[in-house]
Length: 79
Image: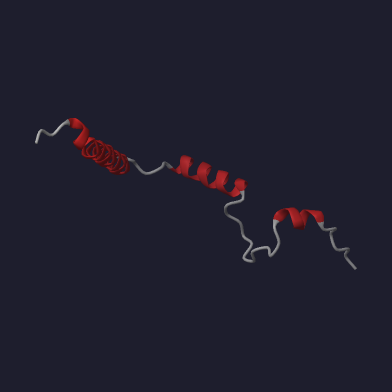
């Protein structure tokens, strides 16, 4: 029985996908190893950007309602 390429195409696709995944993982690992630490000015800039985006705050309580619901509510009046 003569075997043709039509019988082996799934294996060829799997080998190509496995090779691509291996190269992707190796390139990410290599880029992590060569990354140098941030300088002080870059670190403070990144921290300031993170705080300005609201990812870091001094609030310890998470709001119970979504922001749209909080904004739509009238502010309580001070007595």
